[in-house]
Each structure stands twice: as C-alpha cells, then as structure tokens.
Length: 104
Ligand code: FES
Picture 1 (cartoon, rainbow, N blue to C red):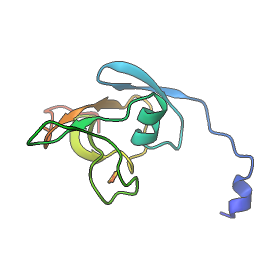
Picture 2: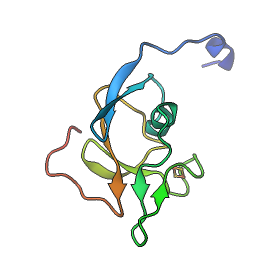
Picture 3: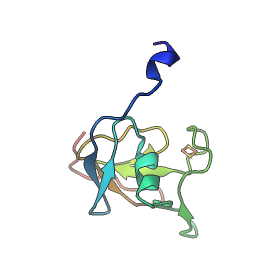
Picture 4: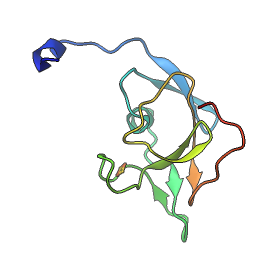
C-alpha cells in the first residue's frame, strides 16, 4: 500500500472492550495499549517482587513491561496486540495466571 493512500484515512466505528470489568471504548487498528491509554489507563501490570505498577515503556515490543492478560491469556504485550471487539483485558499480577477458559 502506498502511504499516500492513507492520507485523510479515518478509523472505523468504535467498539467496546472491558478492562478489569469496566467498559472501554476502542478503535479499529489500535493496540491494547493505545486503547487503554486513550481511556486514561497507564498501568496494567504489577511487578513480581515488589508489586510496582507497569505499563508501556518502549512501545515497540522489546522491554515486556506492558504485559497484560487478554481474554484469559497472560503475558500479552499490550503495545503489540491489536485490540478486538469484545476483548476482556485484565490487570496482570506478576507472571500472571492463565485462566481455564478464554475467548481465543
Ligand atoms: S512497552 Fe515494551 S514491550 Fe510493550
């Protein structure tokens, strides 16, 4: 695709996901991190040893600071995972726990 084809492009209609049980509006093409940031959420993981809050650090998939649980699967990099309608996003504590039942 020629980048000029994207000039003036507009996102598709917004859709809803949930973050820790509350509704969050997201746009097609956003990552999980972008949707959470747009909703004012800047941390969604706590560190293993000291429980300190973490969110995006590098934003390019390198540092793994942004790990989050999406549809029951822990350790998803929020800065890389595209957000999808109906996603169930949850704060991850430490290394996270995979839930027995997930939507993927
Ligand atoms: S913010 Fe660094 S991997 Fe996502």
